[in-house]
Length: 97
Image 1 (spheres, rainbow, N blue to C red):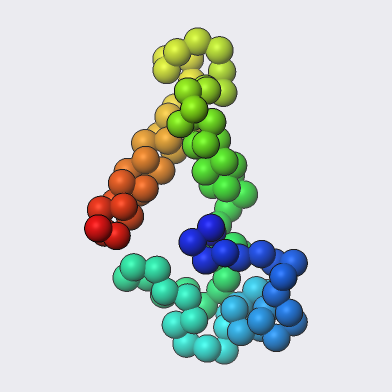
Image 2: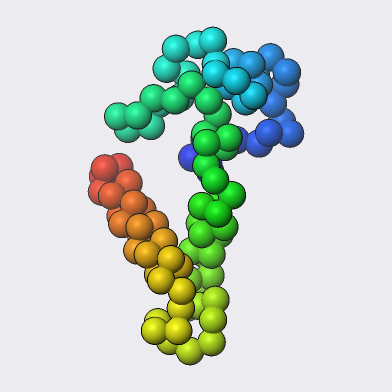
């Protein structure tokens, strides 16, 4: 959510309605990301587990793994999440160039 600089505490009551915090926004297509449109705030759509994986990606990039040992000792979901995040970051960077 860094791209959108979303901070729930900084939104006014009117912004929460416009941005679709608790229910769909009254503004059609208020959120657009590539070919996707959302009526709800992206922070409300992203599961907490996904946020945790994105946070873990920071440590992964620094060479830290959640479990002792190498790749074979890491949970399959963690490895899959890091691959997906890495691919998405590469795709976004490629589109920005």
